[in-house]
Length: 473
Image (cartoon, rainbow, N blue to C red; front, side):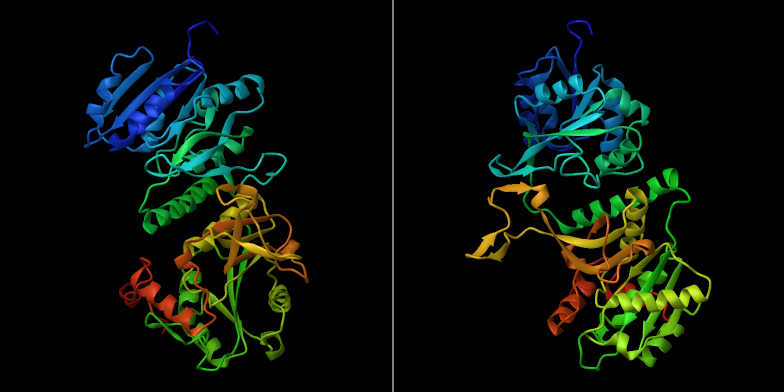
């Protein structure tokens, strides 16, 4: 490589981030490693971005492009075509680099030819740049062997030749470019990470739940697209089991308790029937009224199976119900690859969660998949001297110490991995759900909360949306 050629192309796409972009650009100018070039893409900004960027015009290693708004992934591919360096890295306009970021990551790629990308730990900062915490990622190969937690989309350094071989960034999706690239990357190349914080990631105030929903829904769509292109024929045949125990009418988890104008049971049945990724759906219950309702709901899609009272008691292990249903299915000549439990007291799960769990099993070849929410509170366990914090420091978020709480909405397990002692076993994958989707009906308060969420919070589960949905005959 001749002297003077850049080693790293950094590019900054920006849409209406004039407030932050100078900080991002200046962090590149301050790098201790000097063999870089910088491409700034003003993606149709209508704020003061153009004025801010004027101060950087004419700098020898800086190119500035102004374009009508094209979106992140199109801008990513434009930068890829313009890049002159063998390594390329995106820096989001509201984030900024440690002065040694390019030096450390380029050194890794220089010395470790077998790896196609490298990503670091990072600092989480607020709008004013005040550090909130340090985020520590698991070390690949030692602490992380199941690579279902992707690298950060930005500030990950990638070999340009790897990106070109993968065909660049998919322009189908409007966000989560890093997750899409991660899935495709792992098919061919190896990732590496360094446990040193090397960039500052801005957490904006007022983050909206709808943005989190868009992120999770986009990930589900990326999984579906990846499955269609790379995993044809590898989707497990899934048997969904909806176990319903007979409850007295006053109980909050009674199958016919009203939730947003529909029976509690309706919510799980409608979402299960609405996805075609379930090979069979069996509702099993010791309540004749529940069995009649399910048959009326969809005789073609829902099989009903009377459940012995001893299997529906409070102290009965769910494994016995699974074995009971599987045995009945085997007698009919159907042996599923995996079993999914769908409890009716998790009424706010959606069909997309069911599909994402099945896709996750196929993509990462895991034995089980559970739906979870991340527990962000500072948690303790009880030791010999009383309460002891699970995380030693409040200001360090360590990926390996993150706490994920099962929400009971989805439990998928391969038939071959079923264990009489424990439903979940082997390599366990997960899907993330939002807290408001994870309400689990155990008390009358839970039922009230789920009703309010369904009516007022979650699109597609509102009372008006449900009134337009098909009803069982």
